[in-house]
Length: 150
Image (tube, rainbow, N blue to C red; front, side, top):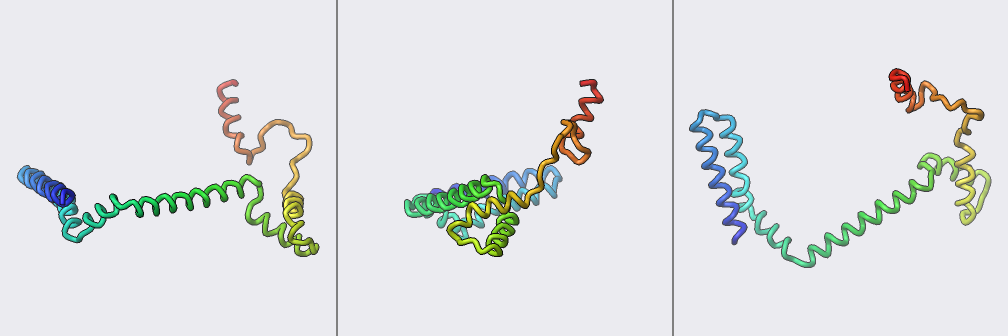
């Protein structure tokens, strides 16, 4: 009941502001304000406000939101742990194929997957000079520092 009253008052206030705006010959702005002012009363008449008010004070709905949050947290956590292992999805697939080709048992496949994936990664260049390569991310930073004499 209170929510409907507040929405109705907001609509009336918005329509008043739109009338003042139209009186000042700003018809485009007045039309936009009128559109915004009609939204709250439209929500009341369609029953959305009553539905939202019913949800806001229902404990089972809040428990549902908590469960959805816990599920989302589990998804995010497992994804982060998966990424921390350092293997991309393609590397895991390639390592799994290599393990299948070699006939490694599924129980022993986790260390074998890591070993096969690291074997497929390109090795670092020995004897690095410490200078950035043209395709390196730090080449533009080095150029700026050299320009300023640092």
